[in-house]
Length: 67
Image (cartoon, rainbow, N blue to C red; front, top):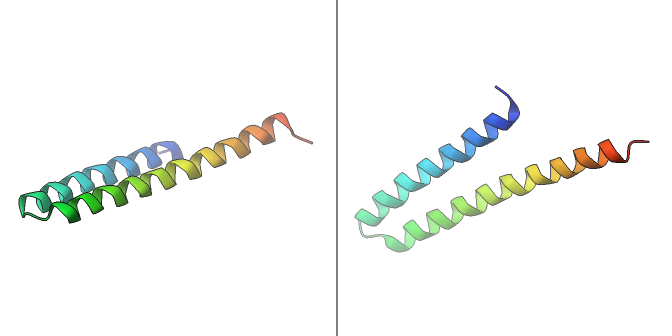
């Protein structure tokens, strides 16, 4: 399995886990904590995506500005 597929599965697993946790928390009446769990997962996914976009730009720079 390539690294790209690993990242996609990692993000999908985090999304599924977050959805389950948020649903359970909302059903138990803890809406504020469910919202915090969702926001935390969003921040984690954003960090993963930003890191990978950074790696992409480094690769593009190395292709076009190779010395």
